[in-house]
Image (cartoon, rainbow, N blue to C red; front, top):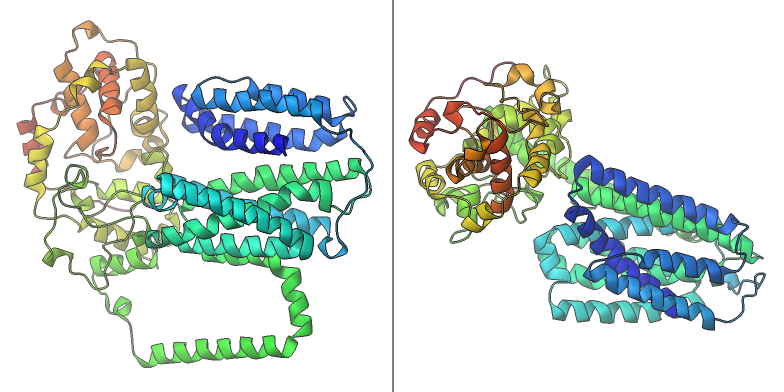
Length: 580
């Protein structure tokens, strides 16, 4: 039990958090970070499959000692604590009972399941768990309602402990299949509740229950519940479970959380078929008439509802005639409301980030699209902050223009320009989102400057990495956006060599020049398709500005005083032209 506890603690406080922090401290991001994570996954899968087949160290004890000591070779505060626990766990291996390699399984007959079903069930559960965890951890509103604060943490700990005890009882009395079914029910309910941040507190009850129920089964199955006759066979089964369910399942779950920001209800249903399918099939065989009658009633209710909708006449979506009206319908139907708000909160940092506060009358909408959560930027003033071309590119390839974005591509909205105008209509709607307070925001722009601490701590080397991540797609000669949309820019972005040497006289670069470039990066450049990067911190902006100030010679109008840029803003926008 001590070995299992040490392993879980190491995984929770180092593998999930401290490792990523160390990578960030090393400046690894983008493609390099993905390469590191892919290498780690490859190594984990490889060793999961090879470990049961290694001829060296037939006894598990030496293997455990080597593995734990390898995990302990780390630094930093969290990693040191985790490594210390691994070293302490090595001591448990000296007091463990002597192994009996061919000890028979103690699985109860009702607990036996085909191995393929066990593997798929654990994979589906780990997938759901990883997706939900990433979404909660990456969404402040959900994180605050689930495990931020001492009260939430203690409650979660108590729920995990209670669910672990319940899992033991369920495994002993009801078997593995029933235990996994209960685990799926709890996780599925939690994932569906997370679609609405207002229900995060309730989701925080079901999520730890589901995690602990399947985690106990995951630990118990290879050693105690597998029907395999030998320890070697059970070891190979454990290797497949940890390779496929543990590594691939968690990677796919995190990927879903990154790219979608939620767990689709359809995927929850598919996971339910995997975990509950044989059980549901057995119920159908025993209660065929009842199941068919229920299905017939549901289909009849659906048909009646559709008939009533047709009798009521065309909906407001069919009545939309202008591109802006049709675009608003697309905005609602594509679910943009789930990740974007249209409400600048008064007396907060929203005013500088997203624009002036709107009046109550301006917020009256039908149907309401103000939004109830914010995973992406607020869109209340997006029409005055992003050009039509920028929006078009972003819908095709969000990750190119927004570093680290998990917004999915909506390129399919533009796939059939002759018969489907949804993409253009959506852009027209977003372009219409511009309030009467633009002048007020310009005053805020004129007054803004990076903090003195940020300018003092600016680091040119860090600025080069940040520029590559946030700006290189347009400003590097080989940038993806620059190459793909070169002929569509109103004015081609300046080409900044990726490894530009310091320009002559760079030592004379003043803090005023750094400030001006940071201001352009934060608020964009009027008369062009360059957007602002309002969400970036002063430290990021100052470091990027320092690198640019020392290594590039920008056009005069981009570093001119604010009044000249104000005049440029007043120029009418050029027509967007034909679709690229």
